[in-house]
Length: 322
Ligand SMILES: NC(=O)c1ccc[n+]([C@@H]2O[C@H](COP(=O)([O-])OP(=O)(O)OC[C@H]3O[C@@H](n4cnc5c(N)ncnc54)[C@H](O)[C@@H]3O)[C@@H](O)[C@H]2O)c1
Picture (cartoon, rainbow, N blue to C red):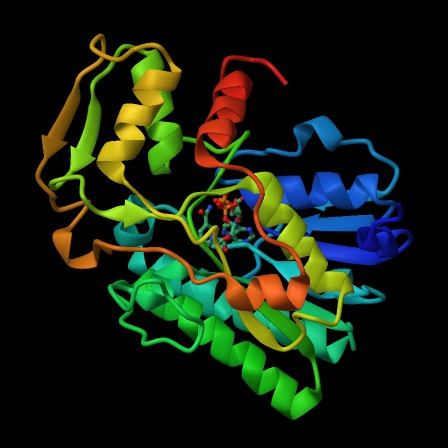
């Protein structure tokens, strides 16, 4: 049976942040589908597409999205732009607030303006469930919004850029509110990957607060497929979409699950620690789970991977397997 994503064959796609975790999976899948891919990334967080270097349909540009002159030539002739470049990670976004604003606001403004100027057909923006803060459960796209951090605010701003450019220039967009994506290649700035790496090193797992805070973990293959669907189907056009699973688990549950799947229960400690100056209670979101009805209806897709299976795949990758 043919797959709708085959429409990417021959398409020219620009991916900012394409050497990062989510970006690397998009780039890999786009190349498999026959797209011609250009990547813009500073690679300050490493290069997760090293294995793809030399691919005939891939060009990689070690550039900064805040440098509009440098990135401008890359937008000509593109069919769509995925904008993922961002300062990511709870600590990282708090440590350098000015850089955060430069990249998420200035960089996003550069990327979307060049996308419109070059009459690229569609702009896909990586937003975040952070925009909701502590809000209704499950979170629905219409809000309410209680952004608790500068990062969350800049993501809301990026969504407003999308709506403004659509109204002014007719630039088609999709804004993707990712909920805790995880999977192979993720580094340990993120909770699930950090738990696995600490446990395998025999280090205690640290849980902030009481551990009852909840998250909606989405496996990368599901997130990548949904992201790619927004590029080539009409369902998600000019929409903001929740990209989660609709199922939440507590961080305590996650910690136990990680140890169980690693056969390390009772051998590695789980310790509850207080929030501190790098990880403040003020920006913690206590409950987070997506209402996924809209994305499912418009994209005709719902995440398939359950957390225990996705975690096993992550562990296999981490240990050096496929
Ligand atoms: N991973 C998640 O669970 C999650 C959740 C919500 C939203 N998001 C969003 O999805 C996108 C991708 O996240 P990720 O998890 O792959 O993070 P990541 O850090 O692995 O990828 C981001 C990439 O952007 C690059 N980058 C940063 N600043 C740049 C700049 N000034 N110019 C060019 N490149 C720059 C980094 O080098 C990195 O490769 C981000 O926009 C993030 O905010 C991710």
